[in-house]
Image (cartoon, rainbow, N blue to C red; front, top):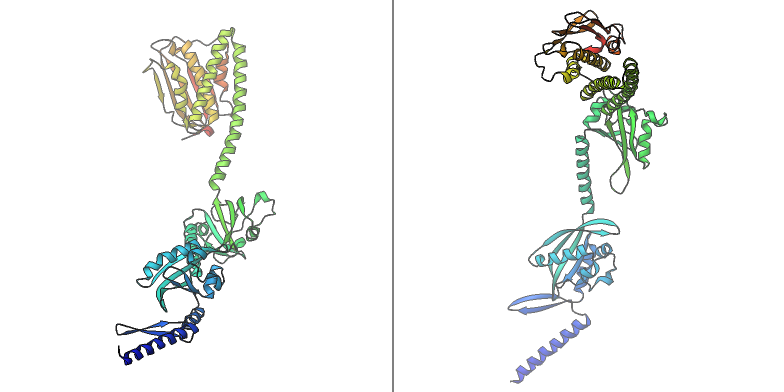
Amino acid sequence: MSLDEVAELRRRLAEAEETLRAIRDGDVDALVVEQQNVSQVFDIGGGAEAYHVFMEAMHVGAAAIDGTGRILYANARLTAVLGFTQNSVQGSSFTDIAPDEVASAVERIMPRAALGVASEEVSFDRLGEQVHYILTATPLRLSTTHGFAITFTDVSERVRAEAAEQSERAAHAVIASANEAVVVCDREGLITHANAAAELSFGGDLLGLPFADAIPLIFPDATGLLQAEDIVRMVVDGASVQGVEAHAPKAPKVKDYLVSAAPLQVGHDVINGCVITMVDLSQRKAAEKQQLLMMRELDHRVKNTLALVLSIASRTLHHEDTLEGFQQAFTGRIQALAATHSLLAENSWTNLTIADVVRSELAPYTAGAAGRFTIQDLGKSLAPRAAIALGLVIHELATNATKYGALSVPGGKLSVRGHAEGERFIVEWRESGGPPVTPPKHRGFGQTVITRSLQYTPSGGAEVDFAPEGLVCRISLPLEDLHE
């Protein structure tokens, strides 16, 4: 080696030593390295301060991390979000300091960021509040270090606004589709929303009107102390109203409602107004009224039936000479009474025809007697009291015909026909083909039942004609107890 070559090597060694000293003492900001005729500049020392200043000036949280996920630098906005100081996070990984949702998101986007910009939205709990951020990662080279720049953009307000808008749309849809009348009021009691059922029930556009004026309500069970405006005031103060019966005297159709009200809360538990629901009670009120009438009617009928049973027992005992005769007569009359009651119950005490009663009472005597009975023009419906009385009369006639009349011989026949006659409807019982008829020497209880059972009105009653060719009974039914 020549002296010139040795001198060149010493010069280069001196330059290298000077460069290392300058880097060590912080006198050099950057280093240029020639690689395959291409110069590369590596940031050294003071260059980090430049991107530190830049990151602090950003309006979003930002961090620089190396390829292993270790934090090289995090700006103040990001450390405030994570709840740490800047000095405490440097050198740490997101797994150590961030919520699990954030750490997992960082780990997922780093491989994608190596190929270009990658982003992902993440949600996590911060001090009891759910927050939402978009994490964006881009490749970064600092000095000789390859890493990533990650920004945290807060989109919580946008997400909350979208959720609130979606909730409001859903609320509008629910209110609009509800069958019950629903109105929404603000804190001052002005109606801000009303569904079609409410507008139909209370006659027109309700928006902007005070609730108490648009829908005046009376609360009968509150002895006048509760008013419509009190509902809004109570709910705005945080109370709820559950199922209070109210009367709406000015409503065009439905008058009775079941009113419920609850606070309207939209975010942060602030009460912005109230939601009032009014359920139509007209059907329930009608059912309750019908039930009350039925209970009263049942009470009345049970008392009447018991009194009738006692009368039948007493009269039967008075006219029968033997215990066996009493048992047979009394049992038959009670069974006749029960048969009519069963028919009334099956028809809900309505729409029971004269023909139904006649067929029911004759049923025990019709076996094997086809062609011997004629029933005609008996399609009118009976009131319950007329049905019970007619059932007893037909039973007595059928019993007498079986013992002594047309039904006591094979060739006997019976016809029961109806026709109107003035202010009454006549049911004519006519027997034929039986033994010759003679009037009875003594008036029995059966005849008393026949003649008196329908005399609860002047136009009711029965007349018996003991004609020799066959008994004829003309039963008069009051027109007030009949309908088509």
